[in-house]
Structure formats: C-alpha cells, structure tokens
Length: 280
Image (tube, rainbow, N blue to C red):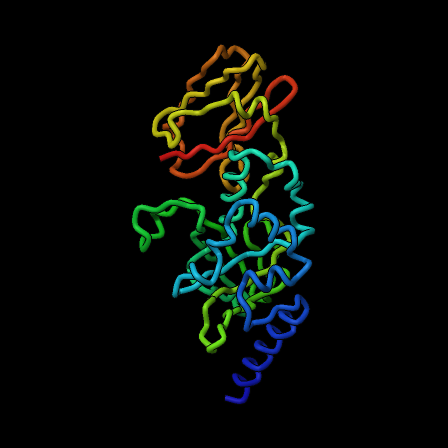
C-alpha cells in the first residue's frame, strides 16, 4: 500500500511540476490557460482565425470532456505554417480541420501511465456513422507509450503530459473538463496551407462538394493548371492528377477514397491554391 501511495504521489507531483513549467492554472479554463501562456500564442491565433474559440469555450465543453493536443509556437514554425498567408475561406476551412485533428472528445485521456500501450483516438475533424462504434470513425491519431512514458502521437512527441483544467466559475462549479497534452509538432504535414493565389482561388471551383463518386474541377481563369495534389488530413499524398491538358473543367474520380476531408492543392504555372473537399 505504501508503494502504491508513493507512486501516486510521485505521479501527481510530476503533473504539478509540468503544469508549473507552462504556467497552467488547473482552476482556469483551457482557453484562459492558452491565452495566458506565450508558448501557445500561435495556437490561439490559429484558433481565432479558424473561428474555433467558441467551439472550445466552457459553454460548449461536453460533460465527458476533451483531450487537446497543443502544439507549441516552435511546432507551428517547424511545420512551415504561416498564418499571415491564410487569407481565403478555403484555407481557413482547411486550417479548422487541421486544428480539430488535435481535439478528441474521448474524454480527459491520461497518457503518462507508466505502462506500454498503443491506442487509436477518434478526432473531432472526422466523420462517423455510429459515434459508439469506432470502426465507423474516419479520423484517428495513434498514441504510443514505450512503458517509460516516452509518448508519441502520430508524428509528434509528447513534451508535457496530463494537465487537467476545470475552469471553475465564481461559485466553484467546474465549467471546463479538458486534458492538455503539449506536443512538439503539428499533427500532420500542412505546409501547403501557405500556398495561395487570390486570383486562382476565386477562379477555381470544385463541385459537387461533398462528393461521392466524382468531383468536377472548374477553372474560369486564363491561368494554366499543371497538377492537382490531393492530401488526407494526416498530410499524406493520396493522389496526383495531371491537369496540363485540362480545358475549363476536369472530372476527378474519387469513388475509391475513404469518407473524410481532403486538401486539394491545385498548382498553376506560377501560382497555386488549396481547396477543401469532403468525400461522403
């Protein structure tokens, strides 16, 4: 019993030290903690740009809670994401999907368990047929612990683990229920978000969107297109389509694609644009 008590005490003291290093206040909300910490100023700016502040506010926190993987400013810089270049609505929509790929409503999930495990967590940017059947979800991240609490989340490393925040109101009632997990990389490769040309963006239309079997790419400009690069929300290249012989429209077969959200980078001779495509 004393051994267990020592382990629990050590565990919670470790979490306390972690929270102190990032100036987290467990009595405050997730957003207040991020806004009060300069290490997450880029994340806060991105959430604001993507219009997700309200979604992650205390008013919209589900009873079972969220786990949020929070990339540091250095993580955004390493990913090549320059928020000043994200100006069109299509880019902002993609950015929102990127950020929701860091949120799971699986609940406040503890990662530093001291045990070896691997687990897939459904993420908030995905779709599902049955929320209780994980096989119907379309977006996951994979958590791996080597048993020594060296934890990875897909391509990212866990820097600081398991800071649970409650956001107590003036009556001492918890309004938040978040587990903050600090990571050193943005989940996925989304550097293409910075590529945008407003003229091309206004000229390119993809329909129908959402798509089922095929999507039509329409170009109303005189800009010559070269290639369409289609990425999933993990930044993996799914398909590359030659557009050099395209006239004003080209049909793209997406019947074999899994249900979910995709980023389509359309590259012209001197510019490019990113569009968001939903596959039903």
